[in-house]
Amino acid sequence: MTFETWAAFAAASAILLVIPGPTILLVVSYALGQGWRTALPMAAGVALGDFTAMTLSMLGIGALLAASATVFTLLKVIGALYLIWLGIKLFRAGGTLRAEPRTDAASAAKMTAHAWLVTALNPKSITFFVAFLPQFLDRHGDFWTQMLIFEATFLGLAFANALGYAVVAARARSLMRNQRAIRIVNRAGGTLLVGAGIATMAVRSGS
Image 1 (spheres, rainbow, N blue to C red):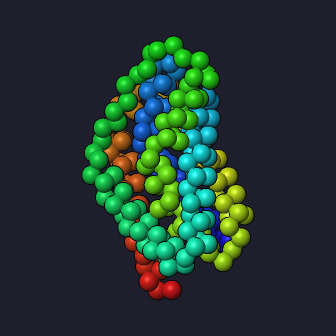
Image 2 (image 1 turned 90 degrees about the vertical axis):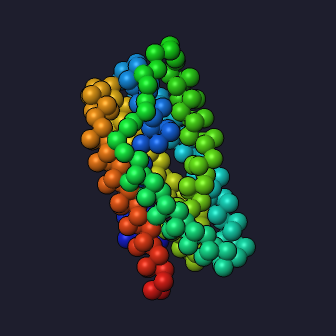
């Protein structure tokens, strides 16, 4: 794996993570209702959930990689189209962040478990990783080394992102209600996702 590939993966992951999804909505809901104390357990739960979904996805991708080069290439094409579709959907999402404050008393362990379940058991998580990860895998490189690097990178970013959302929601709650700010995030993220998908297709067709 080259440094450029890793940097592209890290940049794309950071863009994707900052886009509010079901997991982030849960993090924000707890933070709005119970303040900054939710930040660490929720971030830990998100990272554990992503670890579960990402590991299952990587193992499946590894099996496809070993079985057929054609199937693996097809998966990468489908993944690029999937990124474009996600980008268009996100661009049209508008500026609403539907996160209602959770005021139910919950221990740190319960919050961590809740975040883990929502993240790991969401079928979209595994679907996303199966579509996203092959874009950066070198079929001729060591699969397990790449898996370790990609997982460590993504999980570190996921933890930091969830922690950041929780802290912002707890300290600057008005920002979470600012439709203009959310709309800007959605449109910027959507544009970048579409660009990433198109760039992936262009690079592949030219290689």
